[in-house]
Image 1 (cartoon, rainbow, N blue to C red):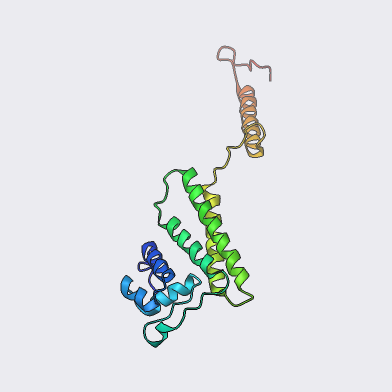
Image 2 (image 1 turned 90 degrees about the vertical axis):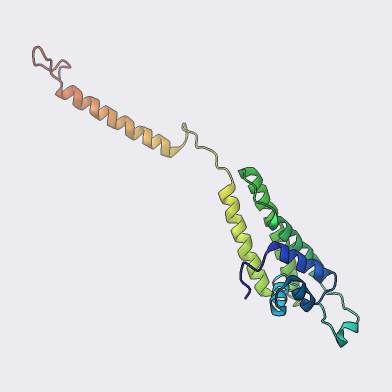
Length: 191
């Protein structure tokens, strides 16, 4: 399994571009500076199959992939572009950024799910996309601004205010019961 530091958005974008141009996974590996099995694994993660290699098979006519593979490659490229953009600093822009990534993930999930019955999609990729979609939904929940509670109708605030009112009334009663006049020593409140 490749380490996280090797799998950069720039390498993924270059790999997808070279794959789209018909380069083999070995050619891509040489150009990017990684091993052939790493590139093959990354292509599989993106839902793609390696193009043919060099040698006798290179002369064969290339068969175009069936099903949603071109759409998957395009969606994966869009995700890489969105993921490589610098993260916005303000909440509203960050929220829009994450929502765009969620739309792309949902599109990929639909395409992968459609390809499952024919075997064109990898179930492991679908599981990974589902996990990513949950993470994005969680991020959206954290970034979504929450309205401040209305003090006139919020039950928590009303309960706290009633408790403070009871404490003040209790302290006033206690003060009235224990008060004495400094001149005569009697309770001025008649208690």
